[in-house]
Structure formats: structure tokens, C-alpha cells
Length: 126
Image 1 (cartoon, rainbow, N blue to C red):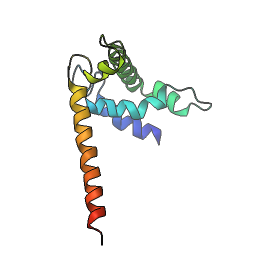
Image 2: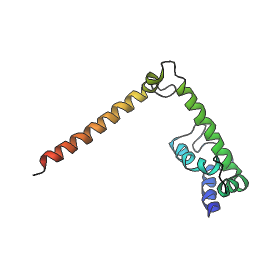
Image 3: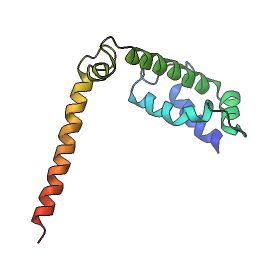
Image 4: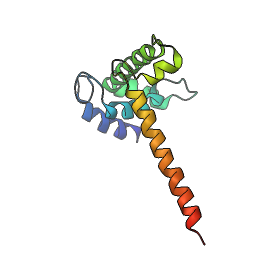
């Protein structure tokens, strides 16, 4: 069963082991990595998934290690921001300055809308 699952994903990636759409990972790579890395990296008492990945689908295992290295390097750059912890989060990831600030504003607006709707619904009830 796991072999069928891995073979479908492996056919999407192809034999090169590159990211799905080129040199840099996309959100689809992050989604795939997030679901499959737990099949490869943690040491389990019965490592059926890990051994299946490594032995039968080495290209997929290589792809997961490549994603892991990319995302680990990306996180290191964010943690070592020059502006300190809070300002490093607010100024964005990597070279995209201000992206975190936009995200926080968007999340704040969403939470405000939800709270406003909840209050409006509570007032409208007879």
C-alpha cells in the first residue's frame, strides 16, 4: 500500500530529484515535505515507511532531504535576523522585508472581522 502511494508521488517528481516546479521550492513542495518527512526522519521501532522510502524510492528520499536542507537553511536565516527577535519576525522572512508585518495586519483584520460578526450575531438574537 505504501509503495503505491510513494510511486504516485515519485512519478510527479521525476528522476532528477529537483523541486516540483524548478530550482526553488513552492508551497506544494512544502506541503509534500511536511507530510512525508515524518515517514523518513524520525527513528521508529518498526521503520517500515523509512525502509520502503530509502530502498524502493531513493529519488523521493533524496528529494525530502533536499527540501529539509533548504527549509533548515531558510529557518536559520530568519532566526539570526539583525533586528532582534520581535523585529526579526515583524520584518519578514529572508529578503522579503515587511512580509510578516503584512501577515500580522491581515490576521488582525481577519480576527477583527470574526469578532465583529460574533458581536453582531449576539446583538441580533432576540
